[in-house]
Image (tube, rainbow, N blue to C red):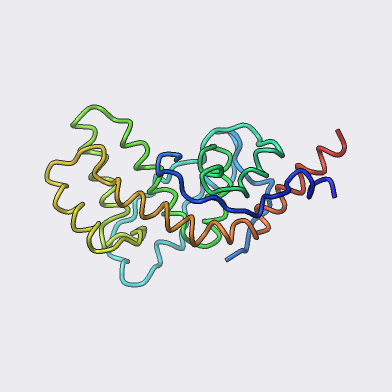
Length: 210
């Protein structure tokens, strides 16, 4: 009852406010990576991706980023994730939890691509921008990649043209498209998953005990 009162109104999903504001077989909430020293499954490369048909000839990059370092989220923060997708994506803990869920749906590449775009936009050195843009293209845009994200032809063609002289914003349209896809497709399932519900229950029980 107390958990329901503290999270009242959490079923309402907010609309996407901005890109910068950034299924449901979940894993146990205790395997979330709240710090960089945690040996959680976020550090494990998904071998299943290597086996996707039609792309076996492509050499998969294995340096998948570890989960972001973050403190354990509060009950209020976790309740806020249910209010809007922006609230989920704005915090490292939220992104880690959502990424854990995406892994169960074999769509973790969407979050990895979004995170790579955020990192690229913080770069100022042109040679570094070109190097990172090439890596992102090979990992997530190339049709030969096992981690290729789903983009429409207009966005893909624009990226292909701009790869001649890439800027840190070359993937902005693609990043927004993937953000929208995660919001509309994966986010509702995440909110109904055991990944989210187990975490919410655990934090609510601790709040009652306190």
